[in-house]
Length: 275
Ligand SMILES: Nc1ncnc2c1ncn2[C@@H]1O[C@H](COP(=O)(O)OP(=O)(O)O)[C@@H](O)[C@H]1O
Ligand SMILES: [Mg+2]
Image (tube, rainbow, N blue to C red; front, side, top):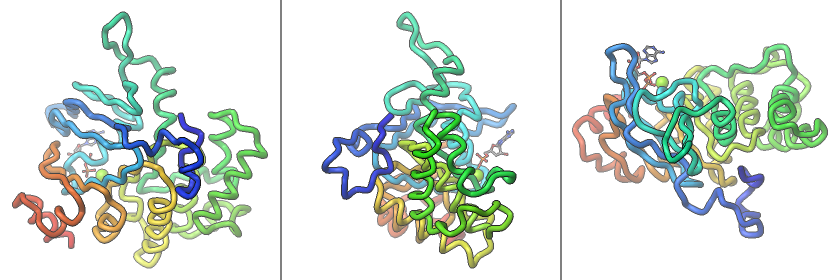
């Protein structure tokens, strides 16, 4: 894992950073996921290059969250393989063969991935600062002082410096979601997964969270894989948009292409319903 992930772009030139070299960070190869007889992902292939911001769009129930849950290893694929940073996520190579990976291997590869969910899921019994330092200290073994220093920087990034001593319930939903973003970044993941992170928020709180994400997209080199119904936001931050339907990517391209000249009727229908 690169210690320089999430590093401001200004410094990227000084620190040879593998996170921005444009190599493949995420790779799905023929990934199939079924729930009972429901084939949710159907031999799905896609890749995300390092440093890119990729947005998944598509109708509800089309399998977008399932993709992110597979990457978090909350689910395992029925068929196919997923690679993160060139390493198999749920498989290991042993004696030239691909076998299901052990927990230790999975934990190591998953350290490269951070996720923010629709629901903020903060630790309710911990103050804001400790919500952010808990995993770096206990999972990564960071020194408490270093973890707190990093947490303060991240709280500054998400505009919550003056709230570090509060409990989650003392914050608005938008502020809680910004803490959740800071908490995910504190683990220095190479890729940040965002699953409709503003859809549980009151409308007046959405813009503040999207501004923070825009800022992160524009000032850090972190790779983002983002599910959102906020099409203006998707347009602003995305290098690539993948239109997803019935377990497959039916169309992909730059935001300009997808939003202004979609090729597929299904994409046009979807966009006219959400725009
Ligand atoms: N744990 C589960 N058990 C059974 N079915 C599930 C489960 N999770 C998701 N599904 C089904 O998989 C499909 C895709 O779900 P999801 O990935 O959440 O779609 P999206 O995020 O695009 O709305 C839906 O039909 C959903 O009902
Ligand atoms: Mg979903």
